[in-house]
Image (tube, rainbow, N blue to C red; front, side, top):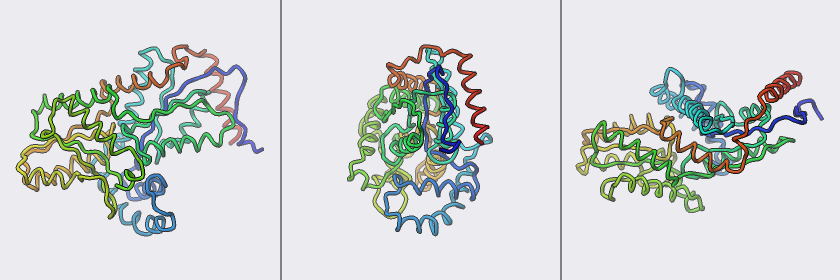
Length: 364
């Protein structure tokens, strides 16, 4: 047994509960090198690209990554914020807001966020929580609709870390929240606030991230859950079938994906005489490249160039107070039965954290 296999622990260490917000990830910078690293990790995931490795990996490393990295880096540069990647900034803000809201509700839990690809990496965050004495872990993938390419691979990352641990925490996992009333209400409130400020459009386009059609045929429930979210949101807004449209974006490769596709739908709406369209993305809780560049920039260009007059993008929920409250409610449901309202002994926690830090340093 090596020194690295030893996990610091002392009897009497107080139990702790943590909530781990899991998001997709982002490059560390809007540069070709950073995007290249990110794409290699992301597109090497067997859950994301379900193509035989012998066929896919030469294409990925020999053609796709070299060709796509400079173009994708330029897209990231067009939306990059002074604080960093919009997805990273929004997810960190959600972590802080959820921590404060759960504390306000009387829960003594640790809230952290992790990325499936890029930083902060899931194993690194889990190691931090482990060193803090976390014995109960609730994983919360920030994907409203379940898909093997998102929700399942987030759980894979947690499970992979658990496999290497002698002392594993108790684990609970929030599968999805596509039809959760709090989430639908937060979305509806966001759209209503936008309409109050800017007026109503002729059509509301609900654009979800696309997936290859074969995933639906293989049994992935993603398409059905997207449709359910759209229907419930339309009902909450009082829209009939003529007032909203559902589409799927971010198609990649030559095979058929879930349809209709977003950009052709925007062009068709404009050509059919629709002068104003608003677009909301109910499959994303935080703004990112796919919303701020693909929709707010490229989608707008497609609609206006086809004859449309006015295009407005409705931002994601990010860390809006209504969404934070709804997420806190979701978390409370999943935490039921765990003693999160009992405050652990602060002195014992501090001593435990210090011992863990000392032992980690000694192990190198």
